[in-house]
Length: 410
Image (tube, rainbow, N blue to C red; front, top):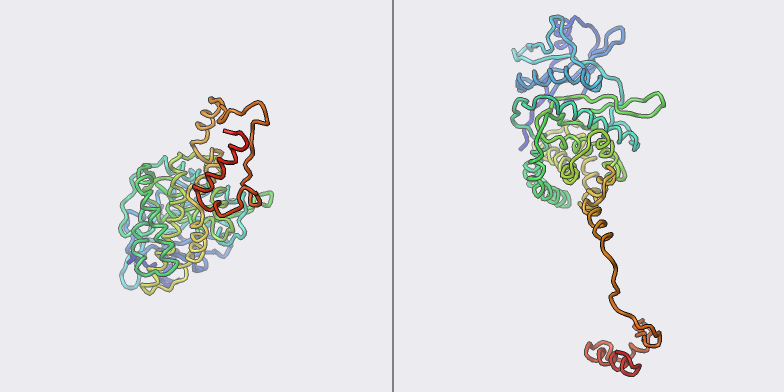
């Protein structure tokens, strides 16, 4: 069973009252989708836009404070890739709203970043996918410099490290080809778990899905990644987890998900080189995230959840996972390595070097006189294969040696 943390259900008038009191802002609120937060777009009479986020009472204050401080720092350190936090009139990044039932909700306002959701971009060009990888590497590099001690999370089903547990739970609600596909994905995850859990850790975004990535046009009219939003799932994990998550959502809707994954990986590697072991486990982690998406959706549907936003990635994840399941692991890893400018097989270069240091010898010494050579015709129409003794090993051997003796061959 998954932990369902529902967003608040405050009225727009309640939220707008707090926005006026704490921020001195006026405008119209428009509902935005949200998984755990209740989100609004605030548009002022002059057209200025902000994002208002109301957190669930179940969200721990220390997590919200950690997230808000990190957003503030990231906005500066990434040159605006992450939206900044708008302080209240008293200078606070977080304020407390009390609803009519006396429940306390933490409220904050973020800068509005223009752009189109990556989820709405179709097709996704190789240039855009490569840029997604570059942006992930830039974000990962900045996050890697932060102290790695975020507050602990409870019931955190979306942590990629929990993918194995989620997939195991879902087997009871899946059947047929889908259950078989998840069993294959789970087995690969468990076989590699020791490898990727030994890669160290840093703070990662944790949820770079295609609804948290913004795309804009540059001066040449080409799409590029202009923003990454929602740090609500930030936690401590190996850095390659973030790349795997971005790839899992980035390949949605592509006809060749491995090629799309290689473009994202190429972009990441040009900015932040990956270790061999990180590349080795990358596609296993990508498939694990896809499995996690579909399994959480299946478990929540089994619990009666019908909110479309909670199930929004399910179809794309099943499609991508089904396509990737037919690709051998070594081929997938080799493709990613080549995209990074590496040998598809790390043992190729040493093997070639060894071959270059060897010299060739004849396997059989041939006589100088061509007449001393005989040709035994074993083709379909060969006269040497007529007769039933061709189907008997002993008889066929006797026939061959008789022919050799008759030709004076040894």
